[in-house]
Image (cartoon, rainbow, N blue to C red; front, side):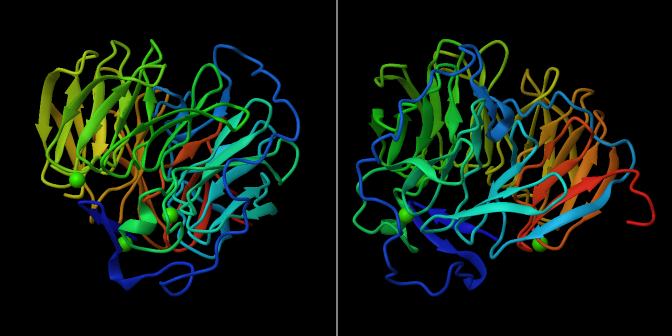
Length: 411
Ligand SMILES: [Ca+2]
Ligand SMILES: [Ca+2]
Ligand SMILES: [Ca+2]
């Protein structure tokens, strides 16, 4: 399902209106801003190097690289969990093995390894955001109710809630209600600072207080990525890619020809890769100058993944593109419909992603199809992989799926 945003105006495709009828709705049952006072001082992250256990695109550089290996044989559905709305959020695995994800029914779900729901937490509007989890078990998730939530650890209750922006209409449809939506990431930095978007780019301290806000002229749905020196890079529906220094001031910006909903990836050499609704994949130097732009035939809402010398991104032209880091085409793979899902690259260079043709695909590094699995609706969610080769991905059929190869016939 698509939320179509043009020039900051957002509507739902197919007349679909999640969470009941449009129009005024009660305010979400969350405290008004500023965020709740922290119940207890937040302990410092266990590791100063990498405090995050899991997040969208697997790390603050957003490379989409999994340390694990995709199944060699076609997997089948091990279990699925049905929610009350499409699942476009990408799941995250907590240290205890629980799977966390959001749904358009407005809830954050925690599901056990066996597929049973442990708990659910209701926010006040649709969830597009993907959970980020710290090593202490705190879960950060954004909602279209304009709040970022910090849930846990060891509880399904918020430790704090941070309201992004001060949009007069917080929930519902339309540009006024969408501008402060918290759809982006969140991304957790090496120092535990949380980066997300709304009516600008936000840096939020681990105790739920604002670190800085950088205002933009359009909604920021693109999850901020972090360069090695701490520079924050995010795109906006004002068509501009921004690089913000750790102190919150602008280093540079780069204008594209359309909304940027794709989240940037940062290469090992500092090159920034990001897609735009102008149908181009951009490669920018760390100083914000253009290295190259590659034309596809559709909007790029998918976020790039970085393999060994190759960038992978899905397009609304139904193709998954593999583009060498010098800007030349390596190969394309055609699916039956638009691609919103962001690809995963496994430890051996194989690629997995979803398509609106309702399939989850795995490709060999050379672009040949390894397998595909048909699910019950658009697969806009980005797949994740656990160490035992289980794949997790959401679908517009309201389900979160766990897929494994080699299941016995009795299952
Ligand atoms: Ca909103
Ligand atoms: Ca725009
Ligand atoms: Ca479909």
